[in-house]
Image 1 (cartoon, rainbow, N blue to C red):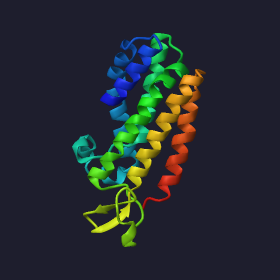
Image 2 (cartoon, one colour):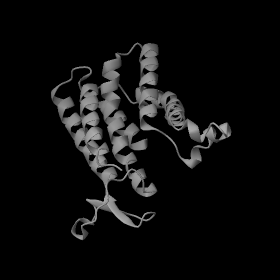
Image 3 (cartoon, rainbow, N blue to C red):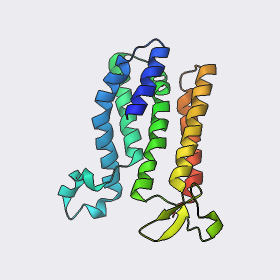
Image 4 (cartoon, helix red, strand yellow):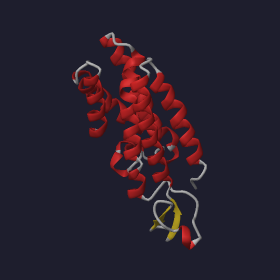
Length: 193
């Protein structure tokens, strides 16, 4: 979150907007985004909560979904831009690189939690990081798909920053995010078990 705010603040200053717009947005977006990320997770894991609804609030036990967080941020951006009379597509292009940076950093949580890994790697010559990662729970090597996605997102971020310097059309980074992230997620998700 801090790296995303720093990046968006830097970009806002460079565009002559000042950092206040980013700080005002993050104060509004952060609680909504967390609630939406949790809500999305709970909806798709409802079988785990129907018997004990109080566990819905046990965020410390895990369970935030990126899609819910992105939808929550988008909803907040729409409301924020309406209130500020600021062009929505311009604002989204301002903050989308921070989202991609956050997703790149966030994938390392999968490494720490030893989750969202890929297929088993049985060839000893391929049992090394960054190709594979050892999963303690199963005692096996698996493809390090969290790392693949993190690198994909960093490359997407670099491409966004280069394109944004050449083209300042409103909405171009949003389109690049939807296509680029969607493509990467499609390819890498197919490797996950």
